[in-house]
Length: 120
Image (cartoon, rainbow, N blue to C red; front, side, top):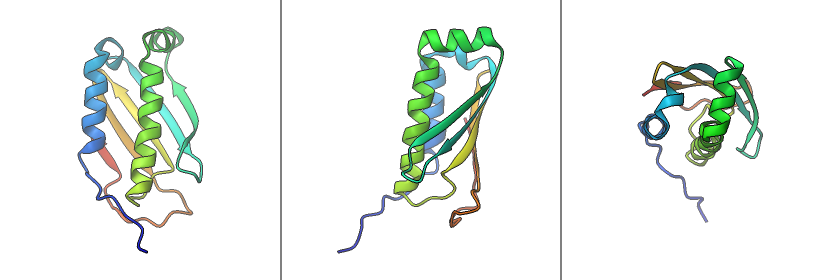
């Protein structure tokens, strides 16, 4: 029996980030970097925020932080399901309303795509 592989939609990630920015625009306009990593089960396992404490607290209170982490977990699983590497490490850049995700190649991954960055 052959395993089903979902076809990867290259625009999916940028659409999801754009929707998040529209849902909570007051936090998407900040400046922040969110570094993340996934475990071998394709689940979000580590997150590190680089921003000022006030923005971080406001993002926590509004739900932006939680929504972004849930979205990252979903995007990791989506890439892994589609077998679209890289999917284990990355960074989300939040810069004055511009949200983009940059994926980093993990030394243990079999890279199938040259496109490692998408922008909203």
